[in-house]
Image 1 (cartoon, helix red, strand yellow):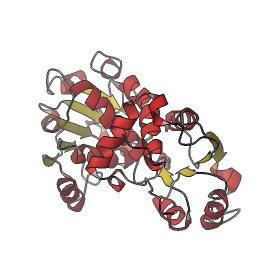
Image 2 (tube, helix red, strand yellow):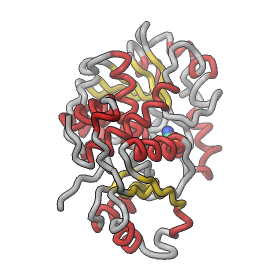
Image 3 (cartoon, helix red, strand yellow):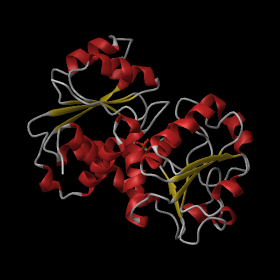
Image 4 (cartoon, protein in one colour):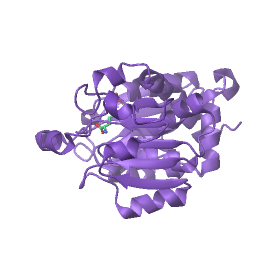
Length: 302
Ligand code: CP
Ligand code: NVA
């Protein structure tokens, strides 16, 4: 039987992304328990709060049973190969979901799996986060076409997936990133091809944020990059989202962050804990977005 994977935001078409957003907001009862009596493997090579809890609850809400597994427990490519793990687990579960250091592991899983593979964050992409991000912006602004989203900081897994989802919904995309931690020209072009109203990248975050409707940022040092943290703190000095920076955005602008946050580094406490912040709505939307994605992968349609 053919199945779909969700390794990147663009694994969905724009139409399917809108469908997933509708599924995310549909009453749980309307989704029809597509995981009834079925399992979902949730494999984590890295720590998690939001992703683990939102995914476990989404699986339960769809009638299924989540099996949380730590990466070192199964020993990916240590105790046994990714391919053996995948072939075995796809005989037990209706979904294989993994948070991995190396994105290529997800491609190897998808190559042999007989059930959908879901990216719960890799070094390259965080598409479940992106669905929650656009869901949150849509709840605030309605249709996102023509609205401006700005990402400030490291063009990382979260930024990449957020930009893809925003492009697919017709938003203007602005990046404020330091040299060497920015989006390559091919990625900027790819965002235009996905449907972005416009794509601009600046070194000066004041310009990137000017007039934006939503200002996003993320940690300067992602999981797996801990040895670079001192160097990164020096590079990203000047990339903190402060009240002064937020005052340059649209008067109705919101501040967003996937969390975990580092107050006093990428964002000032007064911004993340202030009236423009949507970070907890965004975090809670991780569960609704996860439910929408998993329902879609199990064939639900509304
Ligand atoms: N935003 C996010 O993915 O958080 P966790 O790392 O806690 O899952
Ligand atoms: N970019 C961060 C996101 C954490 C949810 C990381 O990969 O660590």
